[in-house]
Image (cartoon, rainbow, N blue to C red):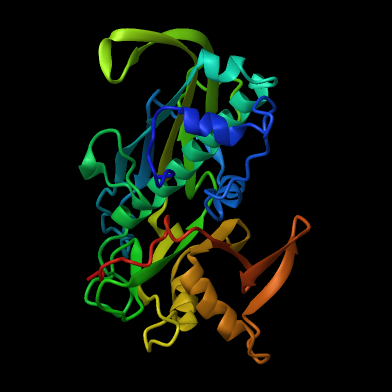
Length: 342
């Protein structure tokens, strides 16, 4: 989900662009492909080892036993607390970097050039994971996460024809230029990330494993009988999403991306969603894209609006709604081209 122009090989053109005019020293690379909000997302989400290797077992209540009103000498029927068990998968995201040995050996600082390549792959893994958290569907295959959009894909909220959890609120928009806002509580009892319980991610940073494989023989893509040697780096990220409590996640769907529309973001629905959920606001985040953020800023500039405020969170100014931090994710992650949810 990161590259716009996909090229799996580090070409001579890339080598020329990387070097300074003398052709040897490594020039500075400005990253203009980074996705908005991804670092903040990783700071929000707690991660725990999966209970069963590559899957995590969630056991939650599905009913509440009823009491009996009795008089003397009347009996009481036995009752039972019924539970539901589901399993959440852990998924492997992987990338592989192959750089011809002579591409790097002809640079004065080939290690720096390789490190720059590594940083791009690491960011790509992180961005692909965040995209998957919101947009993946298990119906696409066993290697996919069950993302928030797929978990919350049908309108259901108090006052609607369907009132079962999790709640998906209707902002009223129609067509195919729509957005969604997500309310998520991140905690061990609510939503959190998971990683394998074994040694796969031991010593990794943010669950990302970087392995220097040294030089390996690689096959020429144009001639399967021709080979070259390349510096190879392997990148892995084991991760999954667990939603323990459906009361602690919600979606506001069908928000028109146009700020002038009558169905642009309605903060009154956000208030409803927060009040009907069971959110611990200290651990809750609201995720939106730049289109919704524009609509929020326009409302916030009204001096009489006391719900939208800017607070310092860990020394950084953050827009909040009734004290809940607002996170803006890139429009390639939370898109503005959703079809209406019904």
